[in-house]
Image 1 (tube, rainbow over the protein chains, first blue to last red):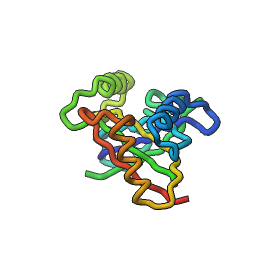
Image 2 (image 1 turned 30 degrees about the vertical axis):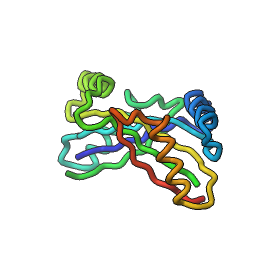
Image 3 (image 1 turned 90 degrees about the horizontal axis):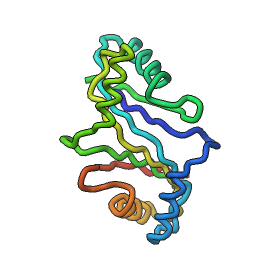
Image 4 (image 1 turned 120 degrees about the vertical axis):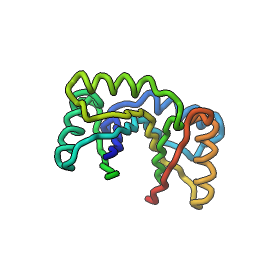
Length: 81
Length: 81
C-alpha cells in the first residue's frame, strides 16, 4: 500500500516560512495571493496485508516521528496497490 | 478561491531527508514502511474571479518561486469558496 500524508501547522500557529513566501509573491506581482501556509507532504509505502493494521502503524509513525503533534495536524490517505 | 499545491521531488532525484526519516522509522520498529519521500504542501488563497486566471497565476507562481522546476514537480487543485 502507499500512503500520502499531509502535515499542516495547526490553525493559530504562526508560519514564518509561509509569511516570507507570501511577501515574496507580492513583490513578484502576485498581489491576489494570500494566506500562504507551508506544510509537508510525506509519501511512503507500507507492507501490511490488513488496512486497519496499516492505518494504525501510519498514525503511530505520525505521532512518534513524522509530525510534531503540539503544533501540527495530519491527514492521510491509503492507496491500495 | 483556495489552492492546495503538492510539490514533490522528481522521480530519480535523491531525497536524503526521506532516506533519513526512513532509517529512523526502521529504528523505531516500523520495518514495514519504506520508500519515504518528503515534499511540500503549500496552501494559499487567491482572489481571482475567473478560474482560468487563477490557474495561470498559480502555475506561474509555482514555476517562479514555489518550486524548483529542475528537481521538483507540482500538482494542485483549486477549491471554490
